[in-house]
Length: 249
Image (tube, rainbow, N blue to C red; front, side, top):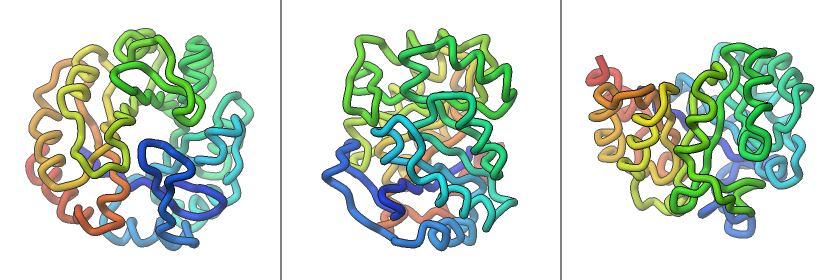
């Protein structure tokens, strides 16, 4: 299982939000490229980038920062979400060195777009499903739909999606622990591997996820995204990844 540091981009800075609220942000760095290098030096094997401005605008806003990170660390796989609503945007990100693109809002509003993107860019598409009480949220979490996260995930079963990132909005940035039961339920409901997100705040969360990563039916749990916890020192990234490597086989 991968432990994946999050770099959330707002106005060119590296920030963390609480429950997706743009007005409730903490700036951790004004140099995202340096931050990416720090997590790489701590053993990160993939980075999770989010263009927060882009998620609300519906189009990339921090694309230049993403490109700078990709150029600085070409050997480090990057996954990027936020404002990806068309094939041209996907192509531009992949062209500058991003490994995976995350489709969120567009996946909810136009599920057929996911299949199209997977055909055009096989092995490079991740679906981001962010849920509040099990119901999928869109547009930077500003809107909550009437679609259940498991029902939507099942629609992508045959599209060739590389992974599903499941975020429990209520726990995101709150340091309250990951929602293991909901993550496992999603993993068991689809053949697509799941990446846990939202509330991964201490080593016990990693232990709990790793314990079910191989035993869950369906696609299983392939990773866990963590943000505030590693920035504030509540979770040691290097130690967490070592644990997963030791107990993951």
